[in-house]
Structures are given as structure tokens and as C-alpha cells.
Length: 135
Length: 135
DNA sequence: CTATTATCCTATCGGAATAGTAGGATTTAA
DNA sequence: TTAAATCCTACTATTCCGATAGGATAATAG
Image (tube, rainbow over all chains, first blue to last red; front, side, top):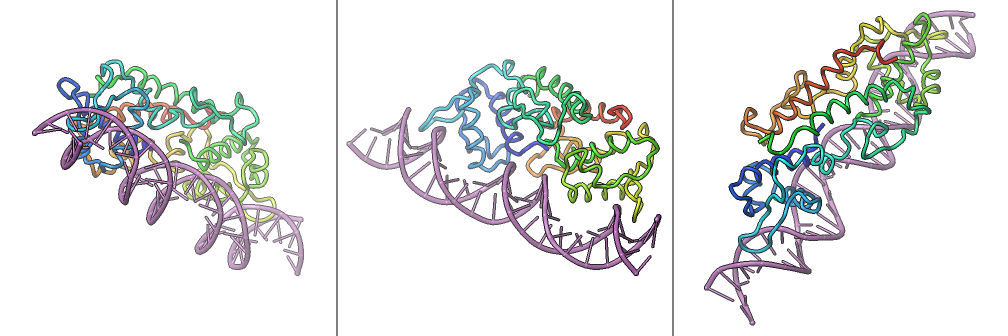
């Protein structure tokens, strides 16, 4: 299941991508338009900023704005920042790999192989979809 | 992320599918071979039985066994029983549909469209993979 | 210089879900 | 009749998610 954090983050990003000239938009404006708790959204935008997707401006007339062209923001990157691993099992994750404690041998594990396929097909979508594509 | 419940359930199913003549296998035997807590596995096998995948036999010489040919057990069916919805968002689920409270219009929601694609590609795998395929 | 407006940041909290446990009831076979 | 197995309900511990609180900091307007 997609976390609300990710869902809200994606909605905020598309909202910002639809702005005219990427001028700063206040958190409150986004949260109202997208029906998101303002305080929760605040923390989400903060992590998007810390990860180089958004810029921010403080004080009057401030807010958040996109730092890059929506075409250059891949869904896979956003998903990894907000949701974490794209794979359904850590032992299959490319960026968040972890060995399963219970599994003695990955190569012969049926779950492993199945989840590799799922990861590949999902990754194929996320890698080839940009923010511009989903507006 | 795949729950351990699903992961263990899949492992148990493949273990049973590898048996010679589908004669009853005790919980303890499966839990040892697959490194799964016996009590936890017990509850998982119970739901697999209640959903028509497994049969059971009580008393000495008892255990669990596959009720159907592994070729006829689709991954999508197993996933839905153990994991729940295959979609990442309820508003995109075929079998567990729920409307999002925050979203006024699904047709124009960018997250909705993106997650439809992911669901389709994942479902395509799970629908075309049987227990026999992953052994 | 000051008041206002906004983001920044840390800490916390309740509730739900997950993973696992306990313990006895029931059924079957030897 | 005893031992071996599943059956079943309830409980618990822990973790994670979604959300909130409250002040610190910075920028702008006047």
C-alpha cells in the first residue's frame, strides 16, 4: 500500500508543476487545494526540499517551488525518497538491499524470483514516467 | 512491502507443492525447513485451508496438503487472500475498491492514473504465474 | 527597527497493523 | 486410552503511520 506521505507528496509535486512560472506557493495553498493536513504536508515538503526536488523561500511571498523541469523528475526517484524501496522484499531491492534472515539461499528462493519480476515491471514504469507525464 | 504472512504462506505452498504425492505434512516440518515460527505458520496455514487452497488431516499422521494442482493455483489468488489488495491505492483496486476521502475526482487524479498502470503490470504477472511456475 | 509572514525543526502522540505467543479444545490413529 | 496432530480464540509486544505542538529562524514591508 502506498503511504499517505507518498500520495500527498506526489499530489503536491503535480500541483507545483502546474504553476505558471514555478513561483513560490505557500504550504497552506497546496494543503487546501489537495485536502491535506497542513502540518503533515509541511514535513513532506521539507523532505522533498532536502532531497533536491524543491526550493523554498521564507517570509512574506515565500513558499515552495520546483527546482527542476518536471520532465527531469523521475517517478522512481520520488518513490524512493518518499516511500522507500520499490521492491516488495528487501532481498530484491536495488537501493535498499537487505538479506532475509530466514532465507538460506536467495538463488533458490521462489519468493525471491517472483518478486524480482514484480520489481522489474514496476521499476520499468517508474523509471519511464516523469512528473511531466502524470500531470 | 510484502508482509511476512504472505512470504511465509508462499514458502509453505511451494514446500507442499514439492512433495511427492501431496500426502499430509506437519506444520512443524514446514516451519523447520523454512525457518518460520511454528505458531505463526499455524495461523497462516489455517487461512489457506479456509480459503480452499489446502486440506488438513488431524491426529497422528496428519498435516496439511495441497488440494489442487499447483498449475491451477494462481499467484493473484494467493496474494489477495494473504496480502489483500494488489493495487497500491484502494481507489485503483479491483477487488478491494474504496474511494479516497481526499480526492474529489478520480478521473483527473494523477496518482490514480499512475497507480492504475502499476496495478496492471503487477496483476499481469500474478495472473500468469501459478504455484507450479515458481517452484 | 519592527511587525508580520512564512518556512524550519524537533519532539511527541494516538491508533492501527504486524508479528508472534499462549493455552486449551477437538479430532484421529495406533 | 493415549499420544499426536490440527483447530480456535484471545492476547501481547512492537513497530510504523499519520498527524500535531510549539517554538526557532529568516525574509519582507512599512
